[in-house]
Every structure is written in C-alpha cells, then in structure tokens.
Amino acid sequence: MTQYKIAAFYKFVTIADRASLKQSLLDACNRHEIKGTILVAEEGINGTIAGLPESMDALLEVVRQDERFSDLEVKFSYTDGCPFYRMKVPLKKEIIAFGKEVDPINDVGEYVEPEDWNALISDPEVLVLDTRNDYEVLVGTFKRAEDPDLNTFTEFSEYVDQQLDPEKHKKVAMFCTGGIRCEKASAYMLQQGFEHVYHLKGGILKYLEEVPQESSLWQGECFVFDQRVTVDHQLERGHYEKCYACQQPLSEADRASDQFKQGVYCPYCVDQISEDKRIRNQERQKQVELAEQRGEPHIGRIQQQDENG
Image 1: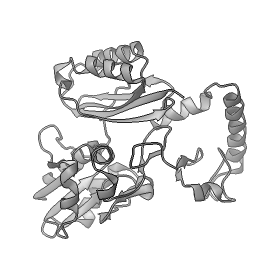
Image 2: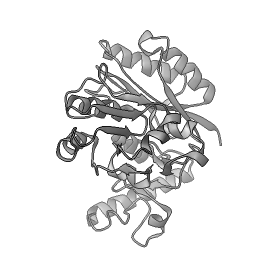
Image 3: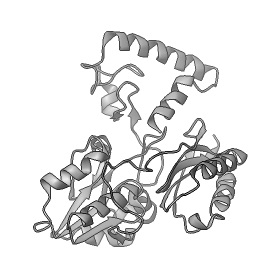
C-alpha cells in the first residue's frame, strides 16, 4: 500500500484576506493532490493534511512562500493509505474554539522543548494539565497529568475558574495534541493571574517524534482527528478504532465485547442508542461493506469526516 505523509500545523497570525487565502490554499492542495482540512480564521490557520511525500513537500514550500507562514512549524507522521477522503478549507470564527476572549498572538505561556519536558513535569511543584477532551485522555496521557474531564475545550476556562488558584498553583505545565489548544489555554491562565505557565512546544506529536520511547514519560497512545484514530509512540497507526454511533475511541477489548457491533453501537452507547438509529446504522454499515468490496470509499464515511472536521 502507498505510504502517505501527514502534516499537522497551525499558526496564530492576523489574516485580513480570509477568502482569498482560502482559495489559494485550496487550489494549491488540489494541484498537489493533498487531502484533509485547513481551517482559516482571522486569528490564523490550523490544518491536518495528507499526501504523497513529494507532493506534501511541494505544497508546504508553496505555503511558506507567504511571509506570514514562512516559519510554519509542522509535525509529520506517515501511514499506509490516505486517512482523508477530500480536501476542505472552511472559513471559521476561530481556528480552535475556546469561548473566551484571549490573545494567543501576543500573550501566551512559555514554550518548553520536547527534550526539556520530562524534567519539568517530574518536578513535584508543577501541576501538569492535559487540556484535551476526556475521550482523548482515555487512550493515553503523560505521567502525573491531571485530567480536567472536559467534554469540549470550551469548558477549560470554567475548570480553571472553579478548580485552580493562582496563589496555590504557582507553576502549571500543559499539553495537547499539536500545541494549538495550549496557546489559548495558557493565554487565558496568564490573563487570570497565573504567573508561571508552560506548554509543550509542538504538543504530544512533536514529543513522540523527538523523544525516544525508552526515556519517554508518555503512557498509551495519542488520539488524532483522522481515520487512524490513534497513533503509537512511533507515530504509526495505533490499536483503537472509532464507534460510528458515538465517536468514542474503542480498544481491542471494547471491540471484543458482546456490546459492540461494527458500525452500529459500542459498550459506551449501546444503552443510549434508539432502535430507529440502530436500524439506520445497520443499513449504513451494510452499504459501507459493499462499497469496500468494490474498492470504493462510502459516502457515509466522507460525510463523517466532514462532520468531525
């Protein structure tokens, strides 16, 4: 199977020409046969895309010709087969929804390089925060990390307001998948009076790319927002799959349960799913399997990517 190069990136920078940037990015991606999603907002861009290695290198060279993205930092991984079905460049209000007014362009926490991360989070005086959603934390996190139990990232500010105290929590180190959520999270914490706020530069993906597994403090796998579902410490496709009905990442044990039916329900949603939805999901799964037998992508999976992206 053909190997594809996956690029994850973001950049907070003022975008005054959102519509024209959207079109130029879409044209460039289509020209180089790149698939995935790049969000464009007034505050910057946020993307995860995939393509053949030479095509990806050519695309990123084009993107970096724009002086606003000349220093664009990218996290790379590889997978067999393309994890996306189409290319989308939607215009958004935010490139990562937060729900509070913050300024990640000018005021963020202190970046910590992956090679320095272990020492920081091993300090007992440092509160280590996982800023990701609960289902992401479920499949893997760092040792000593506190789980705020977030359904969505927009709940993070409420967690800070109710559970944390600038006088008590003198040093806070946070992390997320690629670094983007920590930009806004750290900006908010500084705004609330927290003095020493650190975040992992490049996020978990950069840490896994640069830190050898034998010296790693990462435990489990890392959730990613594409068809791979999770990646392991070698940034190769992990052991989880996603429930179509509720989007919960499922371990091998979850899929072995008698409460799991491929494409229909899983142990996390079997008691909540209606009979009508079960029937619809069963019919959809039948069509997916028929499409796979023909070697074609099923339109339902393309729609699912649109909903999740």
